[in-house]
Image 1 (cartoon, rainbow, N blue to C red):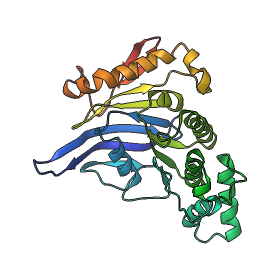
Image 2 (spheres, rainbow, N blue to C red):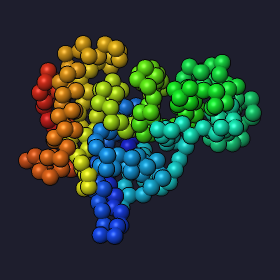
Image 3 (cartoon, rainbow, N blue to C red):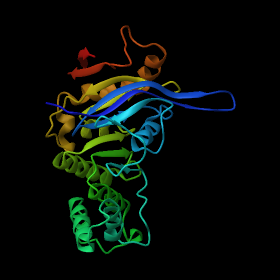
Length: 289
């Protein structure tokens, strides 16, 4: 039985401007269950990062509310860890120092030995055991991002918020970290909200993929349930008979339907219950609220 963890209830975001108010998105409704990996796809300007910042408590909605565990978000919390595109490491601290710094903010009364033990465990989880004494200047881009993930894991958050964390990496490193992220999140039961522009990344990582129409006045067009098996392997997913069905559906959305569905919602569309799409060999098999 699934357990609802995040409720996005009628959220809108508006910004004042010289020519009047701009509505980035409005009346967004979405449920994310505990342990679910959700990817959000949409063109720049639809408010993906703005929504992530509201989830993180770094921004506030103009309307509506976001609830986590039944409680409305009122600011940042260590229960919601954020991993941005940049690693944002402290350059004067070692790998161990960067991760331990996060641990000490979570467990302020812990001993130095306890803090170091938690930090080392997180570092080992992302495959960096042995690099604890290195500083960021001695690390590759992929290793820096691993430290960022370790820092987030070390505080044992309820929710992981990821804003295109692998986009700046080369293809090989990106693929490796995607595999690591999926493995870690499944092993730890993490609930993840992740922004990506990479269709294949979303297909590999996500349980569900949220499609947002173009902005301004963006909305959730539909939520696609990933038809691939839970135990999928990155180098093998393109052999799955469902792979091209979901990939073609996502690309078709980005190429044309993201504008069409913003301006002309389909008959019966209800923003409180965005259509849930199940794909089977090329066509939507079912739609349900």
